[in-house]
Amino acid sequence: MKKLKYALFTGCTAKQSTPEQMMSTLAVAKKLNIELVELTEASCCGASHLQDYDDFLSLVLNARNIAYAEKHGLTMVTICNTCQLNTAMTKHRLDKNPELKARVNEKLAEVGLEYKGTSNIIHFLYAIIDDFGLDKIKEMVVRPLREFNIAPFYGCHNIRPSELHDESHKQKENPYNPTSLDDLIIACGGMNVDYEEKNKCCGFHVELQAPHTAAVLTGNAIAGATDQNADMMVTPCPLCHLKLDTQTKHASEAIGREVSLPVLHMQQMVGLALGCSPAELGLKHHITDVNFI
Amino acid sequence: MSKNAISTQKVNFKVFRFNSNEDYLPYYENYTMDVTSEEVVLDILNRIKWDYDGSFSYRRSCRHGICGACAIKVNGRSTLACKESMTTMIEYFGNDITLEPLSTKRAVKDMIIDKADFWEKHAAVTPYLVADIDECPSSENLVSPHDAEELNEADLCIQCGACHYACPVVEVNSDFFGPAAFAAAYRFEADVRDSDTERLANVNEEKQGVWDCAKCFECAEVCPKEINPIEKITKLHQMTFKKGVAKNNVATRHAVGFFHSIKRHGLLDEGGLVLYSEGPSIVKHIPVALQMFRKGKIIMPWNMPKSDKLDEIKKLIKSSSTVKF
Ligand code: SF4
Ligand code: SF4
Ligand code: SF4
Ligand code: SF4
Ligand code: FES
Image 1 (tube, rainbow over the protein chains, first blue to last red):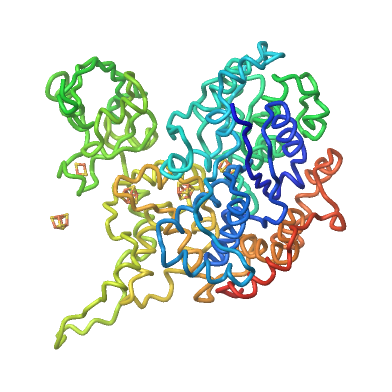
Image 2 (cartoon, each protein chain N blue to C red; image 1 turned 90 degrees about the vertical axis):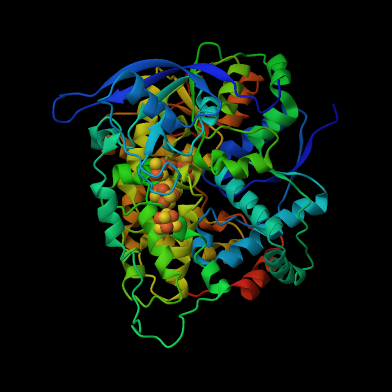
């Protein structure tokens, strides 16, 4: 197989509150011989909040990020659900609306850039599953996660709106019964846990303005996984990770029940199965203990 | 066999049954039926009533996706029964199908729910045109096609409640108006003839308003009329800034904070954003922040990473900004 090569849009979280996510992304890419060219010029995608304030500016900034991936002639890979949503949504809107695209390009021309629409945008989860291939991952597993029941937490913005997902990725994902992360857990040798909240929202985006709502949604998710005997959760989204890993105290208070589960980033789970060391995967950066691994 | 030939398959239905006048608790009844590729969910409801149990209750009227009466949940997914094909449902969920009312806790009888909360929320957003109308106009009151497009088809909402009862925030926060009410608010806010002065502020109040939306996109996913309520919610956010009625609170500062952070660093400064949004209330985040600091999850301001070519970003922010706060 030709070596896979992508333009990596890291987003901001990977550089700050989830350093383990950056580390494990690079570790897994190395194991799988995937080349990632980091888009160091990229700005924040606005995390679905900047556009509430200034939609046009948000489009221009996201188009600029995509333009850099296009300059490399590479597919852009994201490692955060919300980055995926904002970037792919920008692409969707510009590709569908030539007039809007022209207005955005008028601005980008000021800094010598152009958004063409030539680069696709996919989440790293799907780069691994669709492009690299689950069967090949399975063959490469040296430390199957056999003893673990693992609850997949998909996170909203990778699976909804499903139209956007299906437009960006090779394989469709059923927003009511997503399977990609389940398949990846199985490929890594683990047992996938089915539970009601696996495709639900963790509440991250309203944590500041609606802390109670956010805490209840997080609590429900961890409780749902716990009740189906999960030993841990796994997520492709660093924002979900922050919520599930760092907010267990608030979540427990909000739902009136003590809840806490170790939460791995999707990349850490794959890395563990492929034989990466806990240090390479940044396991020391977790709030909820993952030492048992 | 031609591609369009009618095919049949066996489906096991698990159906929510409850009579609030008689039953202490709801229960589920099982029915196994041969379902054809031609059928919609409403056909199944009809067959349960006609072939198995005449007391089975559900709402329907137009059977054309117009009246909005027939929405129920299929395997937890809000669905307009008369519009949704069984084939799609089997594709989504396989051959074990659960039929429930939109909200089991609001069940009155079987699929019928008490939708009072939905209508109260709807009424709360002034869902009608507020305008000084000349009752004897000398000519037609024309709205240009361009102005009509501004509604973004929000006027096509049939008030079926599919989105409302799919919304996780409605479930948790009983003050929250919900996606359908916001779509209705947008429909009139975007209408050039409307002159209401309170609606926009009303739907921007904390707890009840658009800022409590968790951005989960459930409403967009389930709406049978493709109204995309979250898109309307986003537009209501934008309108408050454009019309200068945005309140200075943690929610609005959270959105504006991204602007300031990107302007300075290209990236989001997570700590800076929380500080800017919360102001002095930031103290409540200190316990978690300390834990995170110990685990190397917090970057000190002097180590804050920056985007390469930050000058480009600054230039674009200057030339492309369209609002002020
Ligand atoms: S699951 Fe949480 S972090 Fe992920 S998209 Fe939904 S709210 Fe955002
Ligand atoms: S009011 Fe609308 S839905 Fe009712 S009959 Fe007329 S066009 Fe159809
Ligand atoms: S996007 Fe907002 S309004 Fe729509 S379902 Fe989610 S929380 Fe509710
Ligand atoms: S927005 Fe869509 S789902 Fe919600 S009430 Fe209207 S038609 Fe139904
Ligand atoms: S019966 Fe009227 S919308 Fe379904």
